[in-house]
Length: 302
Image (cartoon, rainbow, N blue to C red; front, side, top):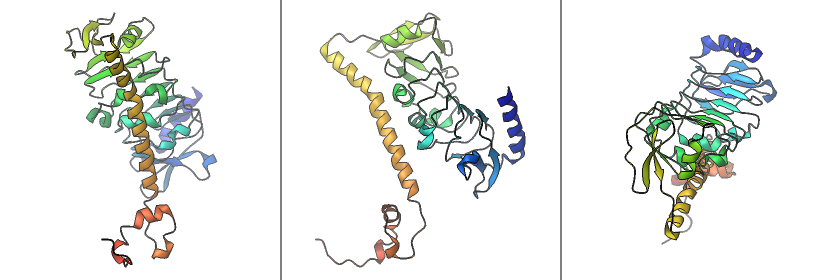
């Protein structure tokens, strides 16, 4: 209750400034907590260090660094397209609401491993390209995840295997995805059929159109799904093993892409006054093209 009053007080403080706040970053010194800055880098509001931080509806488009030490953060209803790679450094964060933003599936790779509750609902980036969302290795990135909401992300063809989510997952909300076809492997089908597992999904009692490797079935709640056939031959087992490695391969690829992107962003520095100043890898990468025409070649390579 005390945290809720603090959050309300903060929102009253920045409510009139929300149209100017676009960047979430740490204050200087970092011990002061986090700050909301405008496009010019000026601080428009400071966030006290506290357990629950509510910065929803603040027109935030860029997150440079997540608030430290908070266990619950609400970033919903903003314009965030991605989270920084350093988000994994927040070892205390357990609850994160980043619904109603512009995030895509790559956000999974930068989530803190301590997360137990995550709301990814209504993200336009995921809605535009959701094919990889459930091919990510959630078990690897969020091994303690208990509750996940992916409502309203225009999900269409969703395949979930035993390797997708950690054993801790007890609630999955896939509702408000009216065109979704859900395919489960046998282990996941049995898991989702248990009374202690909560699956939120728009009710569909029509017989689904399943692929050649799966058959129509229904969960105890009456939800129609496709269930993958159990592999019975060595060839099928090999194919099953290959499919199970896809989430890991996709996840590693996205992590490498995020780290490379972060490195290239660091190289967006102003040009040096002359070639003698080009002493670092960063400056060389940034400015090699701009000096290409001014350098006199000394050796002609046929």
